[in-house]
Image (cartoon, rainbow over all chains, first blue to last red):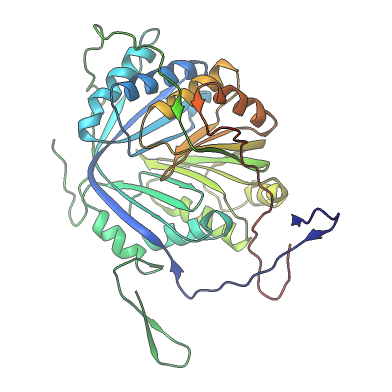
Length: 189
Length: 205
């Protein structure tokens, strides 16, 4: 409901329908590393310092994710190019390891798929469509924020995952045949 | 780097729990200069659901997201993890959907896991991050210094998004602003209208 400044609220209704979910900006990256560790929330400042130090050291990431973990700890996932792993781990160990041991795991190789679509953050059913399309494909870590979706999959599986996503989403560059209700075929790009 | 190829499947990633460089001689970095960003965006009030469990299959994911779709509950922020026989879905939905969401999570449903709900959360998004660790680092350091909780975070193409207390969003912005370089006169973006998906023919809201 948008305000008009006249004391009257206005509701705009628009109809949008698509037979197959349109996406754009479909990208992949392969042979990455997923650095996994957990921290006590009281160590958030140290985590921040470790990230700052990694940045100062020209460290770059593909993705950064965190969820609450077991025992009220925060589970952190860093998706990195392999050449960035040592820089990141060095700073994490320096800051977080100064007062307690930090258990860091590295999952590799992993691949990344990321894409976005119109109003993905405002429409229900998008995550269901993604995981329904992927079926039994493993998704190690994922992030859905705004209109963007990040999927971290085991190394070597990105092509199969992309093909599965193409059954429900319009993947740019891939043609999909749709059967129209009138019996004629319709092709999407 | 090696990997194990299961029959008919993709390579299983290898976990290296002991691969740590020697950090004993590392020096402490100096305090970084303010990071230049273009903007900060705040969300409406949300609830955070953490759904966790143990499973070797993708069925818990499928079931959870299918039920939310069937009930037309939109998720504005999601992170998932599924490996090592454990899964965790952390997701945010509008506060107005809380009661419907709780009804889906009650015992006796077909969800194979445990769920917890945190109310009155909000999202702080800073952009662009430019894949530079400094922006997440500054943000988390500032929030920690102001004793503002962090329930989760994630990056998108350009934004670093933090889940925190909704009632402390303004305090979070105040804490972060002292460490970033924003355009002159910039004010954080707050939602002025909401886009909501409904069933055709049933009108708005």
